[in-house]
Image (cartoon, rainbow, N blue to C red; front, top):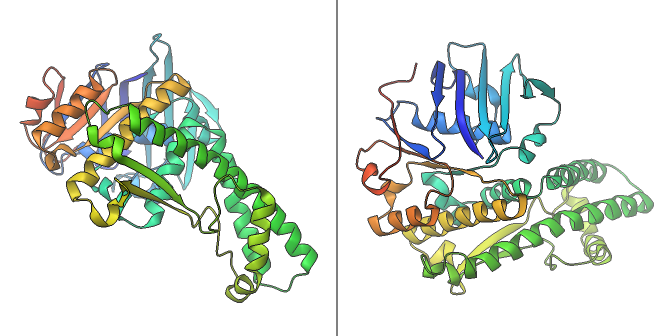
Length: 358
C-alpha cells in the first residue's frame, strides 16, 4: 500500500494544501517551522484517527480555523483505491472510508498501516512506562485490530472496579468484579505475550546481517502482578484476593495491564541504565523496522514509514544500514532541515517546504 495524495484544510500550520506522492515516498526538506512534522502527522492521523503528538483533536486546528479536514487517497499493491477522510468540527470527529461514514475509528487499523519514527523515540526505552505501553498497544492493534476492543473493555472494567473500591461492597460483589477483571486481563496478556514472542524471535533473525547487535536485544514484560503472562485466570484472582486490604485502603486497582511495563535488554543488561543514547535510538529504529516486517507478513499490508528528522542523530554507517534494510520495499517519508539527507537517500523524490506552511 502507498499514499498517492493528501489534502489538508486547517490542519496545524496548513490552511489549504494538497500534495501528490510517488509510490517510493519522498524526502521533505525545509527549515524549522515550514510544516514538515505537521505533514507527517497528517499522514499518521489518517491511519490511527488521532494525533501522534497531542492528546486532544482541537490542538490540531489551525489557529484561524473552526474545523479541520484531512483526506488521503491510498492505493493497494493491486492499485485498488482507498479514500480516507477525517473531519473535526464542533468537538466532533467524522471518519469516512470511500465517502461512506464509519462509526468506529478502529476500522482504520484494518485499512491503513503507518509507522512513525521521531527524534524523541529513545524515550521508549528510557522514558516512563506509559510511553512503552502506548507504543506496544498501538503496535499490537495494527497487527491484531481486535486487541483494540479487548484493551478498551479492560480499561472500562478498571474504571468500574475502582468505583466499587471507593464505596462499601459485599464479598460477593468483589468476587464478581475480580472474576471479570482477571478474565479481561488474561485476554490482554494473551495478545501482549503473542506480540512479544514474535518481536523477540524476529530480533534474533531479521536483521542480524545488517544490525548484528539486534540479535542481542530482548524485550521483557514487567507484570505489576508479578505473574507470567500465560497465567490462568484462577492465579490472577488469587493475587487480587491477597491485595484486597491494600486496594480497599487506596480505593483503586493497584495492579493490571494499565500499570504493567516493558523492559529492553542488551546482552542481558538493562538498556535504560547501561545503553548509550545512540544505542537506544538504533534499538528503537530496529524495533519499528521489525514492526513493519511483522505487519506485512501477518496482515499482507505494507506499512508506510515516516521518519521525522531522525537521521540528524545517526552516523552515516547506521543511516546507510537503515536505507539498505528498507531497500525501496516500503513507501518512506523522511523529513529533514538539511539538504545533505539526499546523500543517504539518493534517487528519492524531494519536496521542498519554505517558511511557514499556508
